[in-house]
Length: 407
Image (cartoon, rainbow, N blue to C red; front, side, top):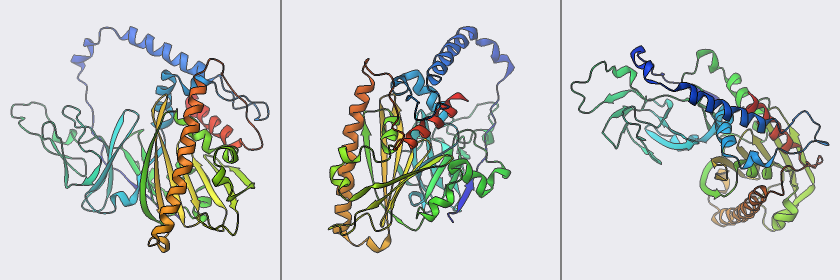
């Protein structure tokens, strides 16, 4: 069973002096604008009704895929609540290693300290908001490139340069703002709701249930675990809303014979099945036997979608993951990480051919998704329909979105 470990750090207190409250002279105007925005986005949310059976339902309106206010609402309600997959444990397998990332307007850094403990923080200096770290690497501390303020890997402020004369400065209140972090199998998860992981939340099953619902054991039994080794990463910038990419992944193989003709030739498409779970949908499909080049293996391929934006494909000796990061209403970044069974790591020809085949599929999907985005911009399209036989997972995804956006 995949092991889940939780790590937490301190949360700095934030103090506002009463003497400064009166400087905000026009709160009513800002509040009114906020209310108009909320009313507008809620109106868009309610244009989809998840209670209507899939046989009669219409899809969410195109505004869900194009509107900038709706996009901001999504970030707050979908991505900044609950657990989000952001990386894998091999990125920080050694002490003092770190990696950075961005989700919406949130910059973060994940690191392993000298004692092996994992931490995550907002990647923002407490002095003038400069990002501290970039990309990935190995460091004993984080030094701000702007003014040299230095933080330990536990987030504590170690040095603030040239602050002689400053008053009411409390070092223990100026550490990096923490983010909740956990590990499930090979995956690192973050939760941006608050930076303190309460002791009662440290239960393995509780955090696992928050992320995966009741599917954790099913994924583990399907080979989604830490036994495979990381091989490589590829990134694709796609000119479409992040949900367009997710919808495409979830259509039960509907598009495969039309878009991926070469890939379709090695699949038994009539064996395609979809299982809907609480927060995960799992698609499975058998591969044709006696293939000249067999990267899919003899067992059914498993394609798991973990709400809201993480995909795990497990087939043969391979596991690849797709992390779909929103970059705006009409753009997303798709990060592919490839993992491989150690028995195939020395087979360079097999690896090269497998990655080439995967690349072909990704390019085909990118072209398709970008074309769909252009269609969503057309005044001729508002909403579509579901094909019940194959698009149950798409409807499930939209229903989970509605639930998140309505809260």
